Length: 216
Length: 216
View 1 (spheres, rainbow over the protein chains, first blue to last red):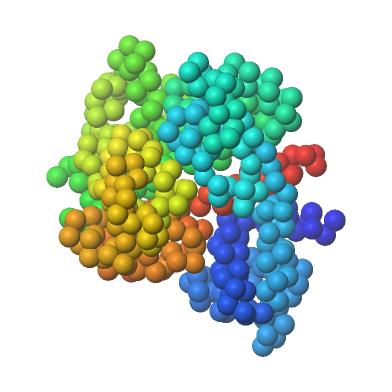
View 2 (cartoon, chains in turn yellow, orange; view 1 turned 45 degrees about the vertical axis):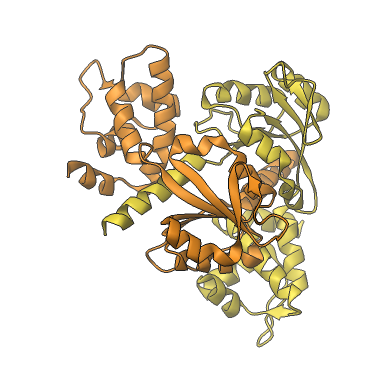
């Protein structure tokens, strides 16, 4: 119950910092360190000490001890719990183009609790074949299959023009959370989360920075 | 000169909306539409009309005409110009693991003005071979090669533990902008831009949403 309360209290910004903390804390553990202090973590990330203390308090009930700091093992366990790395969520992917294939081939997601269990496409040459060990199913069956497999995460890697249609089919199939790689704003009901991975915007920001640097 | 002033005036938030506008405007153009009004664009994205007008004004000198709206072709050209899609930036990638390979195989980046010209790794079995048509070079040569090739963008797809070392080598080689896929906060000099692609945080947010939905 306590865990539930904490989980709701954490801000999205603090939540997004957790994978960074986790990575750092694990690297310390690998080096044989047993405890860590808030000032040390703050210095490593160039964050304020207050922020680090607040972040840790929002995910962990263990208090840092004066002089010693936080027990690394407990803190790591608490962060993994909050991030949901201990339970795996199944997902389907729609759009087996180059980006879709890349994500299907990427073995790193399972570490973070995500498993792609099926993929959809409209290309008749692909349907029925396997890519990275996953069967490709015709996109006309998205809603039906999501419901049958009881999958709640959909990954969209189709061109922007068909992304909204795919999104609607996923939602109709009971999907609650969408990871959207199409450069498009998706309209969804209030209870559905869309997490946009806007690579086009990232690239444009890099490019803009370069142009400004070259001028200066 | 006018263009330079506008480019500096646009906020990062507005800038990030541009790929979305661009995608939508291009889809209208494909349907044979010639002009678009701010209220229509606002309705499509569920943005306010004032925001859309401000965003368009920050990238385009062409004013919307009463009743007709904006000329699609001009608006598209202006947004592409601001996003830098017309000039291609060369990049190197470090870390030819599954994510690195995925990005190297993805043909979609060139549309957005990014071209990966070389990749680095420490694995002796990979060095000297080609992946997606790009030569794999030993990571000890990062700084030297970046300087020789005059490349200013570095993509980091190594594990978090070696990401800072790789980052320092890229910066030493004259790289000005870093696209970081490692779940780690990188320390860089002030004039270097780091664009984080924190997939671990995205996945954790999706997973958290699911757990909250399932409870409700």
